[in-house]
Image 1 (spheres, rainbow, N blue to C red):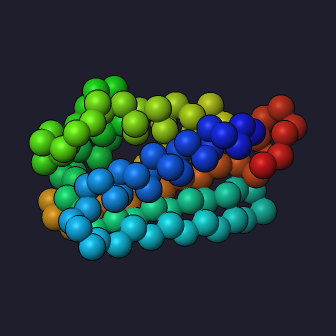
Image 2 (image 1 turned 45 degrees about the horizontal axis):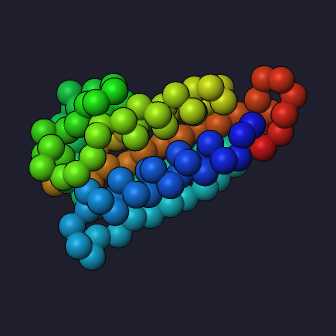
Length: 118
């Protein structure tokens, strides 16, 4: 496991939570583990996503409609997904719609292929 790349995922998700939340909004990070996985949850109170955007935000250069006025390239979540999947994990976005915030869930294997341990 590459700790620098995993840190990059966390930095990007927290940075997005701050960038897309109203001033004074809260970004919550929770890390839990099971015997097999390390699970990361990043929750914000930001602009939220529509159901059709939940997968689209992981495509390169994709930006949610509400986010287009906020500075960015639309590559951060694409890169996060690539890093997570390269480590044998999963990443998903959840939101109850516009203005209701977004939660990103990352699950990484504690014992990734190749025998390395986190």
